[in-house]
Image (cartoon, rainbow, N blue to C red; front, top):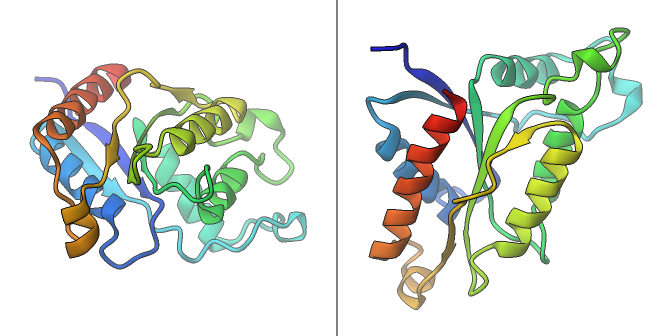
Length: 185
């Protein structure tokens, strides 16, 4: 059997047990035994500022290395005002910048295989997924758009704070996991 692929999870929620963190945990279970999953900690990333680019800051270097080490990056994000959260944009901004003095060929996100999922309101994060897909493609990532999972949270989930996936949601997430493993193969 071939070596397992390395999948890096990027969770766009800051809430301690946010719905998108719960969705990522479920995706991790679906990948168990088939991929090595790691979780990106980008909490120490400063706001993008060209004055901070050279020398490369430790927090930036760590995030870039985690992306370099991944065969694929799976984003799980809530929808904020019809898009993705600002801290997710900040992360992508840092990943889209060339390394100090090394030119465009050093852009870490370029060519990275990515996919997006989201749990949210009745639109099932459709606007966020479209916006994040577009941004990732703009900065040079290779995005698996087809089969991305969007979950419209139930009233029970909103009330309890616990992600409750329908059979259709579960099937869609499982299908996305399978397709992403094939996409990064």
